[in-house]
Image (cartoon, rainbow, N blue to C red; front, side, top):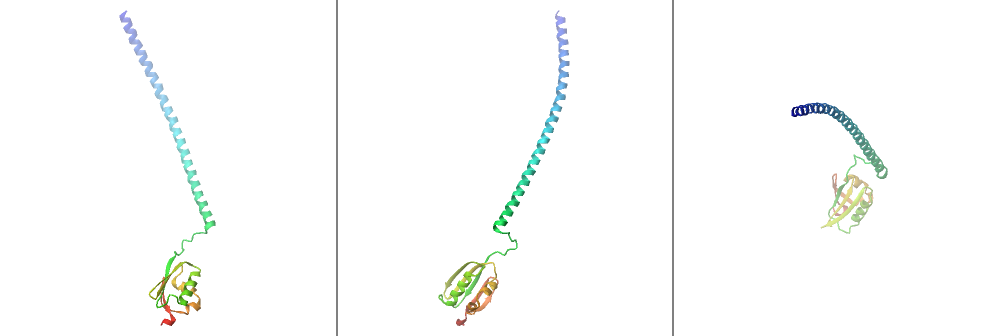
Amino acid sequence: MKLKTKITALVLLLVAGFAFSQNTGETEKKIPNKAGEVESRVEETNQQIDTTITSIDNTIDGAKEAVTKVSEILFGKKDKNKVSKSNIIILISSIAYNDEGLTLLYNDISKANGAKKTTKTFTNGVAIITIESKATADAVWQNIQNKIRDKFEIDAIGEKEIKIFPKKAK
């Protein structure tokens, strides 16, 4: 009997081994199918992500264009060739602080178009008028009223500087 039991156990082990090997084959066949499904879902998800990113990029570009158009409407179109503001210096030598010509010159320049900020300093008979403007020094001088310009002699005019003195001081 012992021999019969041993043989039966051995046959059972062989049958179980064979059955197990058959079942493992089916499981291995199922795993590639599952992997294929996962791979296709990953591809679909990647395509959806790419589509979403493209949509977001298009939305951002559209928003930038809208902001640019609104700012052009509200603030005017930016001129890329626009000349930056710079300081023009008018140096008036041999003049008194309370000179009528100096006062008229300063007031005329302060009220002129294109002069954003005008300052006047005075030291030892020399007055300096500084003008923040886009124009050249010559253009600023030409915009001063003739009756005021006639009170001064030009010593030199550069791009950003004018040197003058009162006619009576010569």
